[in-house]
Image (cartoon, rainbow, N blue to C red; front, side, top):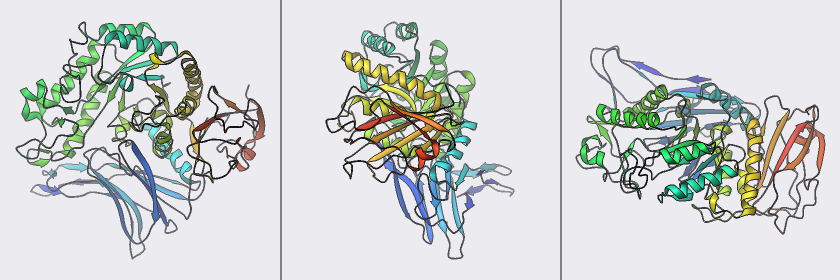
Length: 580
């Protein structure tokens, strides 16, 4: 269900709105709270507490949803988990400053609520004017967090622009090239990507005028002639000739002071005083409420999409909105609504173009932005250990096919952790799969193994699209189990990842939930196994064999893994015996 609060000024003078929140009642048996926090490259960290009297509020003051956003505020019966307990959850669908809260009063009222966070005079209603607050989206389940998520996913899929589109396997160039753009090298990267089954090539930051680092050029959305003397056409033509479609990185709401647009129009930069705000990543924010600034950004992006064969925009947002004002008011509310309008205008002009919401990774993940974009980027870290947790908890709200999930380099660029390819690739399966590394530099065995994982990802994605996400409360916290089940429960894939040392020599059996309890399933391990740990003794049927068991048994009893070392992953395929 969803609710929103509207306020109309029926008086004879302006009305300054301070707050307009919505709330939903919750039974008193909900005595525990769960929400999420985090930071850049370590998003979606769960935290739990007893729900005592008073208010537990999570307030976002970033001018965007934020890496520390609660995402969902969940209340539940004692000990609730992914597959057990009764839970109630709410999400505040807004991409600017917001608040989500849980309140238990001395009088016995028990509420979950949320709304936009407003500063004084940020919203002033003229006579007859109406403010409409963000949607508060609520979900309930008596089958734990998975049941709650299933209802939220259904809501998202109903409102997403393209919920049923088959997601192409992506290669993004950021960690392969950074700002070192060279047309011939990029063509070689695209050619190597095509040979392993990549379907979409996304050119990241560094393609526009003067952009050899992150200190200059942002806001000047013209192709850098010193790097691309013939424009983007030759590179796009090469990519399209390989059978791939082409995507492009943009950050339309931001600007470097060292840019032509900032030098020509310093009045377009958001500020709360005479001086510019402190820089963050060497950039400032363009005032999208300024009509000329808005038109400049809209027209520049529209021209890029009209002049080039672009199928996808990676839309970034790399700084918080701090000390920003417009016409003597805090600018966050107006900037957020202008951002929505900009997306709406571009989608009306170019409805075929897919858009990703990326804000330094997972900094703008909410259900309002997902009504206008085709996927989110959960985090700037592609470290598969970190991604296991990030994807697991982002999935409370976001369906798996709307989460970008890439295979990174062996040595993670954000953490320095070295992980085997099989673990990295298995982690990327339950999402919108892709690759973020220099695939042209792989040796032949690595290239062949990655190609085999990409082939498997193309099989898994048919189940991911519209599938039911299932997660397991395994007794050992080192074991993460993530599955996706077809709606008719005829087929499922499960990724079992060991992220740390096990507490026992032999891991406890792993439940495979979500299947039809009355049907029998053939279950076998799938995917290439080029890398094997010394400690992985392969002492179970997972070593090339298959077993057929009822769905009820697979959930209640589960399957036993072999003795397993950390950073191991198994992909299991369950197919109903009555399906050929």
